[in-house]
Amino acid sequence: MPSPKASRSAGRSGGSPVLGSSNGRYEFMSLNRAPPPHLLQRQGSDPATARLRASESPTRRRGSGSSTGSTGGQGLPEEDSIRLNPSIIGVALSSLLAIDLWLSKRLGVCACEDSSWGSIRPLMKLIEISGHGIPWLAGTAYCLYKSDSAAGQEVMLNLFVALLLDLVLVGIVKAVVRRRRPAHNRMDMFATFSVDRYSFPSGHATRAAMCGRFLLAHLVLAAPLRVLVLLWASMVGLSRVLLGRHNVTDVVFGFWMGYCQYNLVEMLWLSPQVLQGLLGQLA
Image (tube, rainbow, N blue to C red; front, side):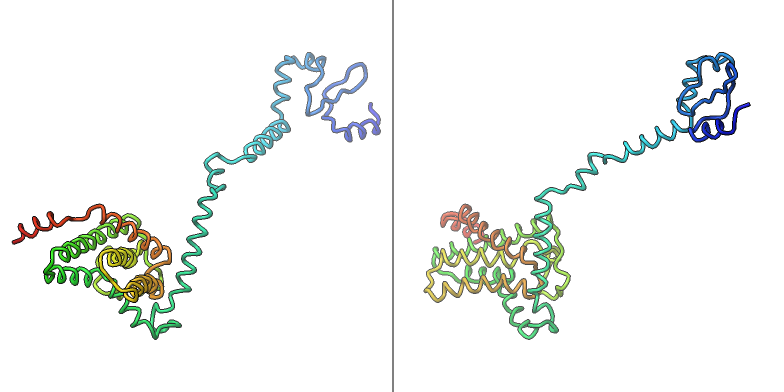
C-alpha cells in the first residue's frame, strides 16, 4: 500500500490516475506523454496507437487550436492591408478637398440675404448675369449682323464659335465629373439648364477667361479698358464663390480651362474666305 506522502507528491507532480504496478511499484502516466511500453503490453495496445491517442489528447488539441488561432490572427489579407494603408496621393487629395470645401463655405458670404455680406448680393448677381452665356451669344450675334467690315465680321464670327465651343466643352466636363454644387447655394440663377446643377467646372469662369483673352488679343482697347476687362473677368470668378455657386477649385479650374480654350480657338480660326463661303450659303 502506498504511503499518503507518496500519493500527495504524485498529485503535486501532475500525474494521472494509477494505471498499474510493477514489482510492487505504482506507475503513473502523464497526460502529455504516452504510457510506458510494459503497461501498453499488459493492456494489449500497440505502442504506435497509444502515441497517436496521446497526441490527440484534449491538452494537445487545445494547444494546437490556440496556436492556429494565434497564427491566423497575426496578419491580415493582402487586400485589407492595402485598404488600411492609403497612398500619399490619396491622403493629399482628401486633404485638399477638405480645405476646398471649408474655404468655399467661409467665402460664401453672399449666399443668401441673411449672410454677412448679403446686402451686396444683388450686385454679385448682376456680375453673374454679365458672364452668362446667353447675353454673350446674343450680343455677339447682333454685332456680327451689324458689322460692315470683313475684319469685324471675322472677329465676331470666331467669337461666336468660341462661345458655342465653350458651352459644349463645359457641358461635357460637368456631365462626366458630376460634382454637386455647394450645400449653401441657392438655385436662383438666371436661365439654367439640366447640366447646370453640377458644379465642376465653373462655366462663368471658363467664359470669362476665354472672352477676356479674346478681347485683349483681337480688339484695340485703351489701357483703362484693358484693365477693366481683366477686372471684369476676375470679378466674375470671385462672384461665383461669394454667391456660393461654386467651390474655389471649380473657379480655378474654370479659369485654366478657359485659358486653354482660347488656344484651341486660335488653332481653329476661321479665315475670311471661309467666312465669305458661309455667308454666301446663308444668303
